[in-house]
Image (tube, rainbow, N blue to C red; front, top):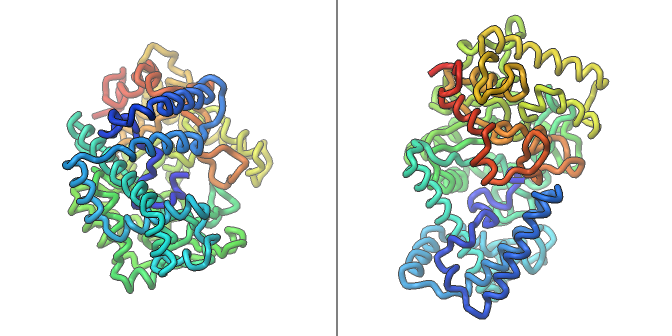
Length: 495
């Protein structure tokens, strides 16, 4: 899961485009046969997903890329590239050395540092220092990957800005990291052992949630002057036009669950929100970046007001925006808050097509996630959808859908939902890519572990066929929805 990474500071090198690395064309001629074999293997992986309906196998993808990157790593750096790499090493310092050391040790001892030999569990021990020296070539390999990933990320942001995007990339700050990963090993003095972060029961997850993320200790953070938090923000903001903070309420308090206990047995632990917010807005201001807080779920009073006072945008998801203090009906667009990112859904919620059809209820029933009878859940979901469609119809957003489609088709309803978002005063509008092609499957289903293939599903069209980037670029359905967002579709929702 991208929300349970080994490191929040250093992006996963599985995202590297190997062919774009400067040294790639100079791979030794004797290794060209290995490169061709890797390309053939990659083509088979691609076909297994696109043609045979298999799940994305990130381990297999990484294994192929890692072998190719090993060949690229054997190519000597030219003088300019060597100087740039050395500058990166000097700038990152101990943090990168720790990260690369964990990666090298994980190749030998496994990816959970709790199971390593006792001396290696401490990043500052003499045993770790000796192992680092013995594995120096592997440490250099993983340091090089961090440099290459940073460079490609910077190139992506430059490309976005050069194309006229005023913000460009919006990066994402996960709530925490994998307990056995690089950050948890390198920063273990700041982490609470025996604890996991989660969420109490709410309307969508009646059993509560345990995310398997070790929380930062607020006392250790404060004693350090919030040094690891500041370093993390600077790293994320380096190539970002905006930063989205997952579960932004975690800057105020987090639901701690003792390991082995049910999420319902957790309790809230508070952080110094004044300090956390001050550092956040300071670093964002220095970077000239926007900040978006995901303030969904259980939000204590005063949190949204504190964020708004500091210019941090919230997140408003259509299905949750109702007149909760009055009629309970869907909130008209003019009553939405302005300082937010408005979306139809998120990665943790059903795609819009699934909401409209009620498929999400059937899925949760199959997986045993419902706490009430199926008929009751289906009736409530259908009533909820009907109320929203009635509002869209009253506002005239369901008539004259663009793309030459029927006014009450599923595609027309999805377009109407996004016209509605344009009618709100929200400063940003978000489009969930699967919504643009009619995918009905959630990418992630909170509350599941191995019952559902979280983060392994390719984006698919309305018929369930996987969609390539090339397909997306030429998709009439996607272009019609983007035209709606650009105000070019018929009866657009506003400025």
